[in-house]
Length: 407
Image 1 (cartoon, rainbow, N blue to C red):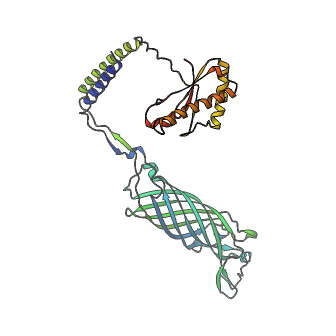
Image 2 (tube, one colour; image 1 turned 45 degrees about the horizontal axis):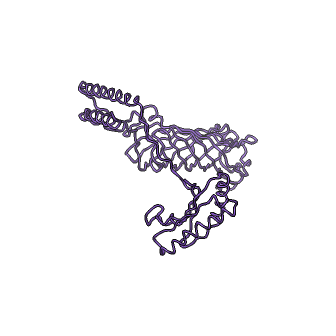
Image 3 (cartoon, helix red, strand yellow; image 1 turned 60 degrees about the vertical axis):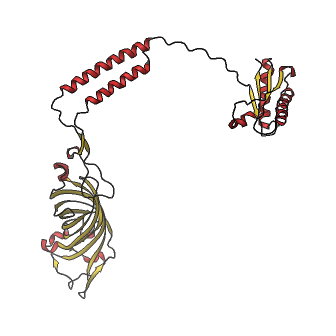
């Protein structure tokens, strides 16, 4: 059996198998929340939060004041962020922290606190410090992490940790009772911050939140037992606007319908399996048969070299002259005779002109070969008035001289 017939039989078997599954319900593809969520495009899931509240300083010297005198207001911030997944997000913005505390000697900051100034507590003066900073936070939605993402969930518990750079300025009391803000001598501080956000979705676009935050500053201001502003806690109420897109895409998975009766399909599969085995057996038999030998092709005689010419020219180019030098060495070493045939195209010029071109081209090649040491007796000069390859499209190949070994 021929291979083409075997392949045809195999294709027929596969087509029969395909018809067996025609009645099988179509597989559909749906989003499956249980498979996790993909990361959305960069322009999706952005948000803007405005927050305001109060701040309490936890420095050692500040604790001499009553708690109500250490509650600083306002503390506020503006944050811009993006959720990269339902669990992970980043935000950055500006934050202001008001700090009310105490210092033993207000002159440490170049101020002029004295008895005419603010009230003292156990030898400490009240101070009022403002911290304005730029912050960046990494956020983790704990609710989506532990309980899975739900687009209609009202409450989300979010934890975050980050860093900030704060610029401080201090409230100044003069001897005459005037007050103002002083920034002289008050350094920039670096801080680490962490907190939790209790977020309540009031609509698809808006959420309210309570942010409880702890901030640890790197600056230590208790030089010579002056004030220490290294730690504070804050509580801020926030309003968040969620930009489009606000939801997430779950991975798409195939849903395979339940097939109640598989016996007909099993029978068709068994039939296809039998046909495939029979096809494989026949193919193996075919491969084991010896292949008939192909008839040997007649030897192809190729030219030793070919030189080409411009229309109406019999001059050998510099490149072809170098080629003929190498051809001369081959002819001398072989000791054989070679036929030099001059050609010209039959589509331009007259027959007389073309006859002269064929002869001149062949004679010029012979002269170059002889000049390079070839015995003239080894060279037979002839011409051919036919088309070398046939057709007007091949006239460029007809303007040539061929050098072939004598048959």
